[in-house]
Image 1 (cartoon, rainbow, N blue to C red):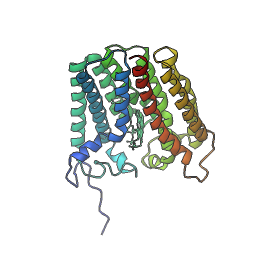
Image 2 (image 1 turned 135 degrees about the horizontal axis):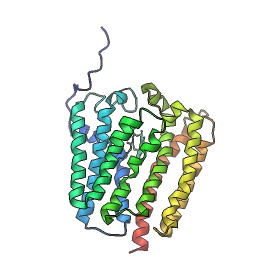
Image 3 (image 1 turned 120 degrees about the vertical axis):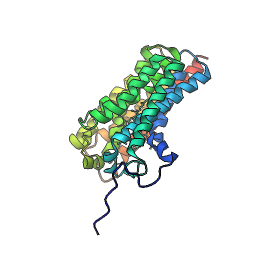
Image 4 (image 1 turned 45 degrees about the vertical axis):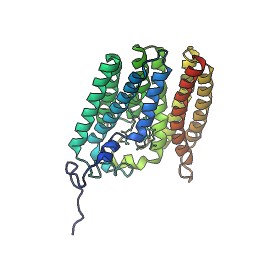
Length: 306
Ligand code: HEM
Ligand SMILES: CC(C)=CCC/C(C)=C/CC/C(C)=C/COP(=O)(O)OP(=O)(O)O
């Protein structure tokens, strides 16, 4: 008997349920996207009606989820070839590809439409740009083509605090631009730390991630460079007087720890039989870092500007 072949991704092997649709939104990753969006909104100098604030955050969540669904619709075959992603609803055959596409389009359209009607067309336009950035520019264009995919593509995930801020104020000022820049600079170390220990996965499906194309040493050096740049950048909201000392002190401590962990990864030639512990530690801390930095921004705002 020849081995059973994988059913085409348009023919679901198992009935889909709501959990599969929920999984399409990449809920774990999007918690941080939603959190940074919420912090951008709360840290803004203007306070808005709580119902409108809730609507804005819901739109960011729905838009990010829609973009993630479109990302998986496009990448179903790539995801099938990687151990880390093979159990997602599309490669596992639990969901029809066209349903994922329609679900993604529906969520994306609804999020932009509701944001525009409720909060204004400037935050809606930035949300639309970030969805297109992730689903089209990063997923379809950059990811399969260049090892700089996540450096440029990281812009998509950097928009949410700007969307939150602009939803509250109706205006783009220096502060939301710096919040964007901080996440932009944070993304490469966040992702390359992970890519160092799942490198073989990307090799198998031909995605030109930096460790695959330029090698481990170059990736380590790149991680360190971005972490060095992130330290002063994370302090700029305080330097320009956009925050008080609570944010400034938190940014100094968090970014120093981030730099220290990045140096542990960046200055070693290769993994020395320790199961890539420093790389895993840096990836884990990258998530704690962003949660804590943005939480500090909000605490600073509420404690120092009551
Ligand atoms: C192009 C940019 C990025 C890439 C390529 C990337 C890639 C990844 C990958 C592959 C994972 C592994 C977990 C999984 O497969 O679900 C991950 C985890 C994670 N990412 Fe990113 N990421 C990026 C940007 C961001 C941004 C902007 C945020 C939030 C602001 C973020 C938040 C997270 C979180 C919270 C996790 C952990 C999820 C968990 O606990 O499983 N990522 N990222
Ligand atoms: C508001 C809005 C649209 C926000 C978008 C947020 C955003 C860009 C998040 C990126 C995070 C993410 C899941 C990257 C995964 O990369 P991948 O898709 O290459 O990872 P994979 O290998 O796990 O599929």
